[in-house]
Each structure stands twice: as structure tokens, then as C-alpha cells.
Length: 72
Image (cartoon, rainbow, N blue to C red; front, top):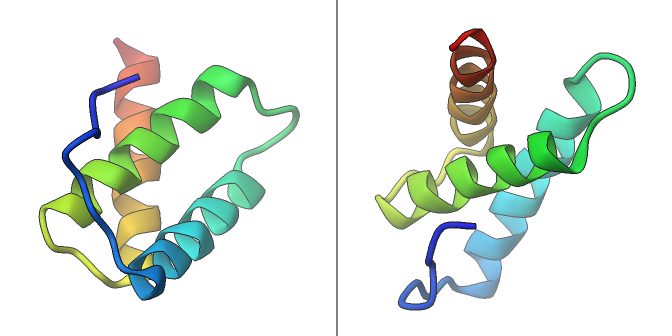
């Protein structure tokens, strides 16, 4: 997992990230591996750390990055 030890999020932002993660995982087809969940979570954490606060945008970016990484 990427190092997020210096990241700090308010309870509100944690809730937004949880909403994005739950929605992203729920939208994945079939059984979801823990590696996929970890990749989605890391993207959401990194994107939120950069300042994004819209859960739909967090979800979309995480799913797009997952799709790209699965093609490589």
C-alpha cells in the first residue's frame, strides 16, 4: 500500500471517501479481489489528499485508474 502516514482527513472527508469507496466497489462486476479494493482505496486516498471532495468524482477517478491498470 502507498504511504499515507502524513495524510490527515476530517471526519467529513472520511465519510466522503467511504461513500466513494462503497459505490466504486458495488459497481464492480462479479467477485471483487482484495487487490482491486486496495487499488480503488489508494486512488481515493491520493485524490482526496490532492483536494477532491466530490464522492462521485473520487469514485469515477478510482474506477478509471483501475480499468487502466487492468489493461497494462
